[in-house]
Image (cartoon, rainbow, N blue to C red; front, side, top):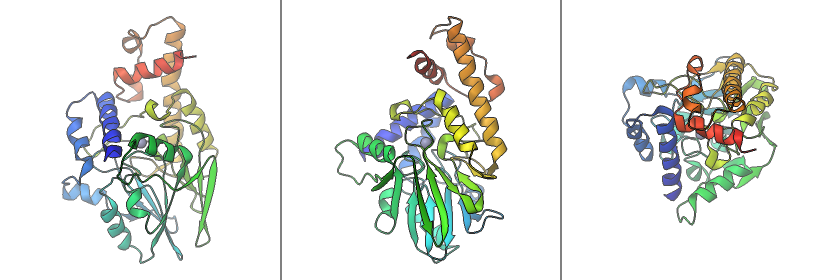
Length: 311
Ligand SMILES: [Zn+2]
């Protein structure tokens, strides 16, 4: 429970920082238990095949409060591999939805990072599946949980830079390309399907409530702004055409380039203001990022300022 609470508080903080809306807390508060969704929202969250990508399905997610993150589902003749698993209460929904498209058992769960809206039901999958994540996913989960008696869901199998799973002859690769959203982000690459699940290194569009998604740098868990761009450059070197973002709709490689360039503008403009002698208090009013359409709260901008001035 402490895990959930700690991470939920982090998420509340981030949501408030990003949105600057007290109302956002209402949505985040539902993260402990399933929210009540409209038929239209439920339809948007229903599993669907990814067109032209053999064996790959998307179990959609649009935010960190109502829907959780996107889940990728690979169905093979020897079982199912999933990427991410939404919230702590999402196990039943995920398994029910996967059972609607295959009778194969879920054998592998890969985590893109440790956040509760992506790896929340790790513990529920462990009796039946191998749960794999970057070594910092495990470190972050255990640290954030503290001396908790609850199942933390930290992945028992970890890796440092890259690992692969071959299921039913289908290769799946997990690449840790550097820091960004956290210090434990992985992109999960399906080379045969030319598809990548980016985790929250890349998010796009709107939440279920219509508010705009903006990148969140989780400094408490090793996130970074400046090197996030290099991490995206590493991602862009992989050979793929289809993208499952951490949150948002199915996209193409072009949108990652746009996101990367926006991030570069953000960091470059803050750097230029620092070089011009602008201080921490004035940075928010001096920075013009309206064209980026990322609703970053003052505290989020100042956190980047702190990173860039820390030497
Ligand atoms: Zn996240």
